[in-house]
Image (cartoon, rainbow, N blue to C red):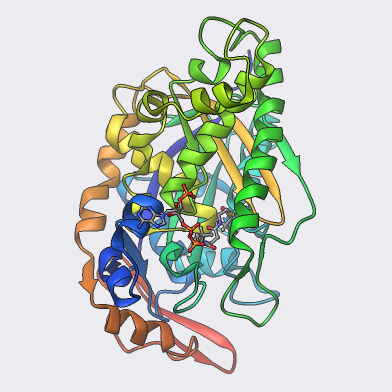
Amino acid sequence: MKKRVGIEALAVAVPRRYVDIEDLARARGVDPAKFTAGLGAKEMAVNDPGEDSVSLAATAAARLIQQQSVDTSKIGMLVVGTETGVDHSKPIASHVHGLLKLPRSMRTFDSQHACYGGTAGLMAAVEWIASGAGAGRTALVVCTDIARYGLKTAGEPTQGGGAVALLVSETPDLLAMDVGLNGVCTSDVYDFWRPVGRREALVDGHYSITCYLDAMAGAYRGWRQRAMEQGLVRWDSKLPSEQLSRILYHVPFCKMARKAHAQVRLCDLEDATASGPTTPEARDEAAKSQASYDAQVAKSLGLNARVGNVYTASLYLALAGQLHAEGAALANQRIGLLSYGSGCCAEFYSGVVGEKAAERMARADLDSVLAKRERVSVEEYERLMNLPYDAPEAIAPEPGTFRLAEIVEHRRKYAGA
Ligand code: HMG
């Protein structure tokens, strides 16, 4: 019998402060509806230099271990997916390993490919376990990032930050993966990048949306072909994509999930063998179905709308939001997930939600993770953005969290948890 492998549990860490997106719009002289209706945002996480990608990753991982009583002696692999590296050589995974005092007999490494790095790490862990090489051990995969474009740029309302830690095992209480069905699509493009030494990303915003949609179409069609070969979806009165209970997307801003969903539907409508809309205009219209978006996508976006882009963690924040909202109702149902990383690579995969998903998500206590945050003014947000990255403010870490305390001779020192 094939091994069941997938995500057993997750935990989320976010910066302790956020700015209201309408406050930001007013400060920039923009109609707030552009950021709320146009981009789908509500709030945006704001980090200070003490909340770097290491401290957020370690906080999420420590929370996962504590909330879910994880047996750390069974962890055999620790992967951190990130594009907010703090060193060209020493991985964030080694910091997390040290801060959490994890056992020495484990593989640790970082995985980088823009927002796709977390999914690449997750698949390495899943396939390691599925192959038998893990020999019963579990893997810890942490996605951590700070999305930063800079003040008064077009990307400014699509910033954010945070981390999601995933426990991967043969007890996939959250999501049992359909191993081997994944569809992938790669292309060498300059849509979004951050040259060495730069704190802010460079982005060709509208082009990046085109790249995302193009790559995801290739990834989705690859998954669909394999899923059809396995009899999991078919050409029917329902489109193949409609045979998935929910579809979760990489969410750089919430409106992007709506565009992505229309693209998946358009792939089906263009390729459909049965009768359907015959003109390109009619297909475009059917692809944008509000009913389909409401039924399959809308409920996954609750956390993303309040945190903003979290690069590698964005898809997993959508998974957290989806299971937080509907974990019990989705038990035993198949969902699809689409990961995208600029540069670029897209991967579409699927899995079946576990019967204990609601119970596991209750332990993740997401409402209180978000409720503890403090709303700051745009002036305070700008002050935090302008602080040098290597001079963290002297703030005591909240219980159960880590903070960067200081950097001495290029060595980072952390406090907390
Ligand atoms: P922009 O040019 O300022 O905005 O930048 P716009 O003019 O395109 O308007 C945005 C939307 O608001 C449009 O809706 C407008 O119609 C609407 P759409 O036509 O797209 O459906 N709008 C309004 N709606 C209501 N009331 C109004 C109003 N005014 C306008 N008054 C852009 C937008 C996303 C390009 C910018 O924020 C940006 O560059 N963001 C960063 C790049 C990004 O997020 N790209 C996404 C795809 S690439 C990706 O996901 C990878 C990434 O996560 C990185 C990685 O992989 O590591 C970024």
